[in-house]
Image (tube, rainbow, N blue to C red; front, side, top):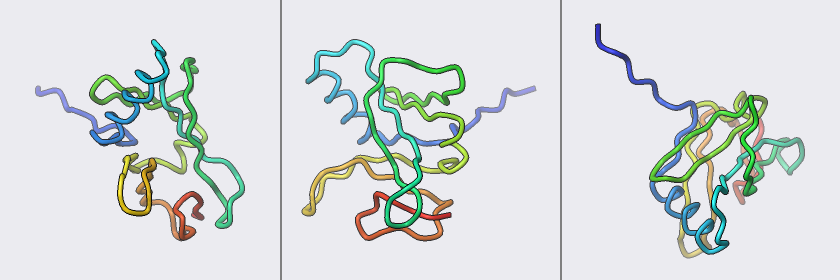
Length: 115
């Protein structure tokens, strides 16, 4: 019987992985990971937060790509399941962005959403 390859509940793009690796290298950090969380607030009800972390908690979902690590806590995963974390560098600026299929509305800057 062939073993089924499971997709991670949150995807980390190559661009986001490259940026995480660059940030960690710039900071001379050995085991820094990007933690993405969903918090109450923002103009649409919930907002994303991005922080570097060096601690993986027992309830974290861990997603790795190109040597970069993304952490999502179990509560935030309820809102982020199926999402894609990307890093975009365009005319407006450079930033991590989340494409969240669970969001029913979002603000114009993309940092907050509602479900």
